[in-house]
Image (cartoon, rainbow, N blue to C red; front, side, top):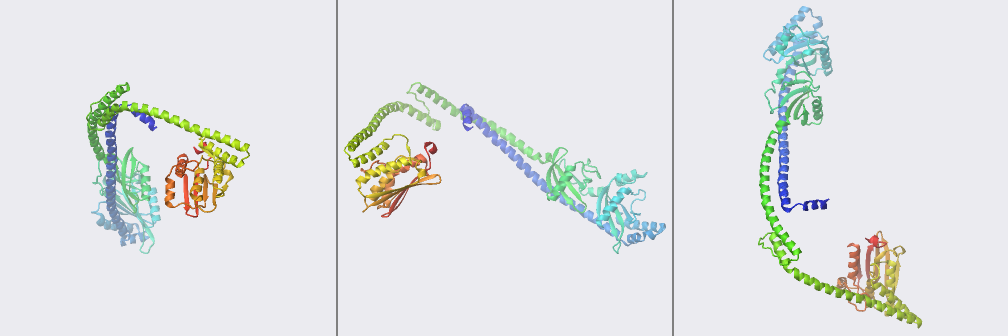
Length: 613
């Protein structure tokens, strides 16, 4: 994929490539910065407005709660006033005239309380038998609730057992009379109801109370508050009914048109999240709210994203204008920069074409100090030296031919020696000189292995044979000087090893360990498998080596002992193994002077060249 992209890019001229690169590098940061700044500023504005909205809703709800508490306290004062307690307690025993007198006294008492408090329009008191007493209100425009709605209120207040119940009613819940239209015009079509049951001083249930509050009273608490263009504040209860609203399209005492918002309010209240985003009428809005538990009301503010993002859009526009200006300047700059690169390159290409045609006297006049100027200078030097290099290549070719001839001669000599030794061995066999024949057989076998025939890899069985042949020869040289013991696992004999990897190590044992010691030496050669690796160790009980001798041995790629067979040094064996199998494999040496020396070979357990690859 990367290669194909490079090929595609290289098909475009450098000048065009630079122009495109400058354009992309100027447009891309502008685009990223614009998007980034837009989202960052939008998020910051939304966060700040969300926090401010929540605080504002908290303040509005606190003001509303304070008023609700006042109204609840008023209802408690009325319910436990002596006049109301006496009237409710003895209502069943009173005559019609006594009931009227009691009702008038209660109205006089409450008139003093609510005459200057225009929020309360009506107060109704009911006995346990649901007989009504008009405690406060306009007698000309009586407040009558439908019986089914009234019974629902009684049941709910009974369940609450004296706890105030807040609800909302409209004209659908009232018994309409001839003068209903006049009442609606004076007191509104909807009203907030505070309902509660109350008890006698002895703790016995004696009646119910319904207090009607003008919706304007609650609306006035947030009427003049504005959160921005298109924003609204409204109150809904837990059932989704609108209690009050700044938005004229939300009619009071009717269900909120979007059930999804009500569900989201409840879900976020459970998680104590007081600000969230939602869609209202197809437009995104930021919602901030506060919950009033005592009334089961939600004070909600809706702020459209169009208002929130107004400043961010303006910032993005300024960035766009600035970016376009920078883009135009970048294009102009890229044109002059690319021109300064492409023109010298064109001159250089033309000169190269002349050189390709055989014109070796081409020179380019470019005294610039930039990279292209240095390339031109190097090109001029290259052309001036090209003829010299051609002559040098011809001379090296002659030397190479001479080296190949020498190599061929070096290959002929071992073959001649091998044939001669075979003749000597035949004569030894004819003359019954078995020891000479045995010695020559081992020497011929080693010589064949050293000629480089076949693969670089041989199996361990063959390598052991080379070692045994070598040791057979050394046994005639060092008569009864050493003994050799082999411990090679059968299952590794067919695994492969580099040719002549083991023989130089055994030779090193004889030359540096066994030969200098007094008495007979012992060499132990072991071979075994450890998981996916082969371990071959060569241990002798010779004099060993000190640190200096060991270091010099590891530094030599060839042996300096002229009496050795292969001339291959220990370091050479280690480098060959690492080169062929990898850096994790090779030799390790453990030596205790005058006690023992162990050389360990580690290679992969491979069956052949394909396995090694």
